[in-house]
Amino acid sequence: NSMHVASTGDTWWGDNVATGLAGAVASITKAGAAFFSSITITGGAIAGWILTATSLKDASGTVGLDSTVTAGDDVRFFAVNVVPASAPFRLTEAGVLTATNAVITGALTATTGAIGGFTIGADYIRDAANSMGMASTVTGGDDVRFWAGDTFANRATAPFHVSEAGVVAASNITITGGAVATSVLNVGLMNWT
Image (cartoon, rainbow, N blue to C red; front, side, top):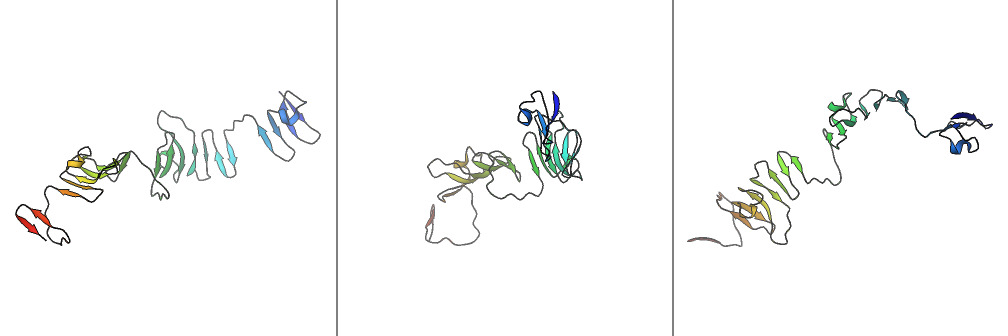
């Protein structure tokens, strides 16, 4: 490869003089536009961002991109801490997002994971003991939406469950007040209206 300077002031590197800038592996025009087919830069600054061999960070070092490779799940993007793995906002190469005090607008979809001590499944949210929860299963029938006292798999026969039609089943209930209107309750020999 050799360096060439045109009468226009444009400069390029490459073997073919006839193609000029168009066929160059690297070029800098008189106006300052630069093209490189491959470039490695291990230090310096770009518009106030500090460039190192493994990162691009703001001047304070608290926001940046990092390409450090370890044996673990390395942080690739981070904010609000000079130590990427300790940043309250960070994203790892495996896609693990940590966001302290996040406000998320728009749709949020989760089919696995946990929230507030509850386990998230594809069609349920249940406690860690799998003894109560809510279900979104759609079978075409009157599906159980809330249950307690048995597992997700046995929710239809749990001691307490509520169907999507509002049918409530409770095997042991104590009512200490209130009123029941427009219905007749019949338990053995007792009749209420």
